[in-house]
Length: 123
Image (tube, rainbow, N blue to C red; front, side, top):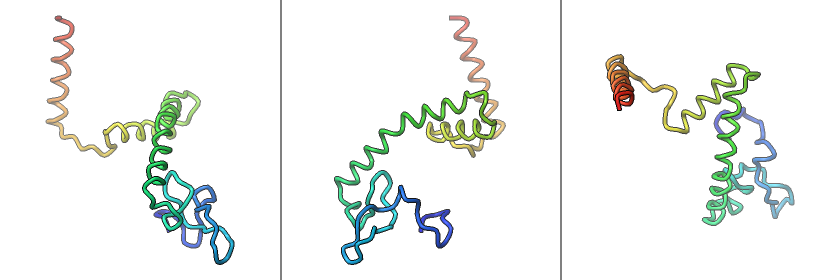
């Protein structure tokens, strides 16, 4: 069972292993590995399947970020959805939501940015 899945609920059909059981003749029903269509017992642990699954997922990164960017700037979207999209983009860019910054660090960063702006104007 996957984290967050209620007990007794089967995985969604699009994430289930598509292999057929030799004994029963029915679908496997186990979780497929991310980006693939089979579970690890039906070939999902094979290096070529893992490599193809990673490639499939990597191809979805740019369209996903573009979708998040559109959601962030959509004036008709709810603020909660826009905030979630922004959080997701920031997480992927290496800026976690729960980044703790002390007031001294913030003060130092602010002074550094002001100095950089003044230097850019003077140049």
